[in-house]
Length: 460
Image (cartoon, rainbow, N blue to C red; front, side, top):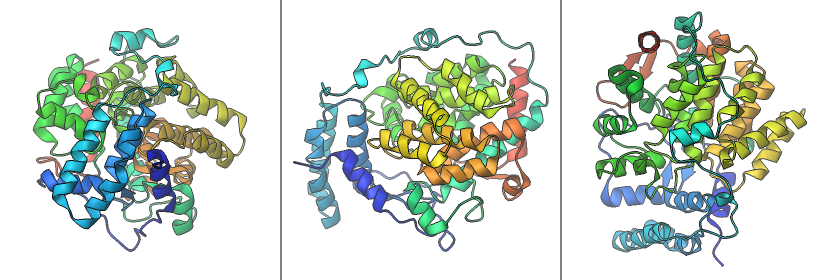
């Protein structure tokens, strides 16, 4: 019997020893790079390394794992994995193209697994249905934006970039392997880099929001992705492929997208919270509009959670209260809400964060390290036990491992808005954001924050 995709991926991750980033630089895209295509893309998806940390990945294996997590029987696809790896390593490009086509067919024709609990949950498919599925939430728009808006938005952006920069060097590894190489990580491992593939989506969102305000649509946002973003990973790659074929939101995020429950919206929806400070329902709506471009169901709900956390951080002083109230803004009978409330129950029960994470990691062991579920669990552990301390929260994220730059970006935004960013984390970032988007190669973080605050006031 073939090994389950999740078992193979987990074994790969547990065996991966971090490349020591104190000795080796990253390999991020250069502005204006050519997106891989054809045989180059196929080879990349059979064997890759994360640009910032060099963690190993096999995206085709991860597709199979992801579809299994969504409640489908993927045994036919699983049986092709070994052959695909062998063909890739032997350099048989003709055979690999054929095998990869067979793999895609197996994924696209997979049937629901009757033993999966996935379809016992409710996953509303429109904003109106998502809104109706929430608990008792604040619906009224505040009379005005919160006090201290400019500085708090700036601290939110700096906190996000600090958390992402902290996590970039260690993402994709287990907490145990990170500790084995780096020890107890409570500071930047290297000179912090703001270059990553997360923030570019937020910058594009801001561009559309500047043009359309709160009337922005998923369709126009998707078209701006086509205009500005040359390449994406996992769910965003599928979405860009769909968009370029004329498949518009919400289908662009759902159609033949195994990754649609992954972390992509959860990693980038902080901008929705910054644009709706103290107005969590609006933050959730903006995150939904953004989310369906590239994700569906639980992946979108992850973005809602991230946006709501950031929005609430403007009006709360206790991070645990933020975590508790965020629960109300999730579709209550969704699997994402189940995972979120389960994580909240466990952190309430356990005094030791290590024990809480051990339980959560075991519960979510079938999920990939880029899936929304284990990463929101890591954020909850980080913020609950960190109790407002950014250094302690980041240290706990390193102990959890997973997608540390995405989780660090969310935790850093929440804590930056709520308490400001300590000099230890802010000073090395400075005022420069680097991206691979044409025309946005180098940006002033201060000017980015000023633009964000201006748009909040203009559209209030």
